[in-house]
Image (cartoon, rainbow, N blue to C red; front, top):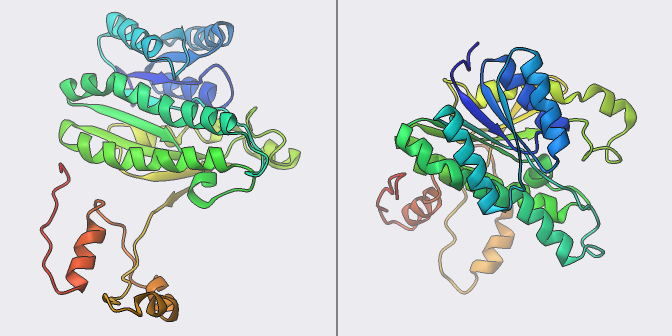
Length: 297
């Protein structure tokens, strides 16, 4: 029971991947808050956990409702006195090509995925800072990391979550808060119609959930993007090539075109430790020594 004594909140846990996450965390010993828009669905998952000998609390609230999320956090603290793990899983799809997509559908997807994760993370942040322990998992997607036709809204939200993860991981490090991203591939209500039936059979959500023990357990990394599906795990990275110094001449743009292959050469690329790494390397290339920016800045 590696998560015994821990308290986890899983958003969008009334079905699909969220349900699989909640059941998995409970099997590993965590007490789990089942968040969902539907009370019946949340109650059903909580009952499954209780029937298996675990502890669960069902709570209905939209992740975009700050007051509702705050109430959920309050009730969790009243009942168990701590919140150790937050899995930001709730999401919606409104797939269309960008030409046919309404801005209302763009905003809705951004609001649920990105702002919902920010609202929930903010609600538990001070608790985790004070207890000097926390694990937050953002749900990103290959659609955000690499793009996917018809998912401009979803891809934008999912890549934004990577940026949120990167910064919260830096800010939370000295408080024992580790923040990571999970990029799942799973057969859920959101993926039906996107993947073939044969593929869906292989992509049982339960095969993704073990990634949570890696990302939210005692020995969790931080600032990792873990891709999981069909029992396969892989890591994704955002990298920076060595590039080249072009200078400030009038022909800098033309040189950029001519030297594109050199700029793009990945043979010595790195995974930057923080965002200012880019500026440090640019200034060094120009002959200046840049001040090293500490992570807390």
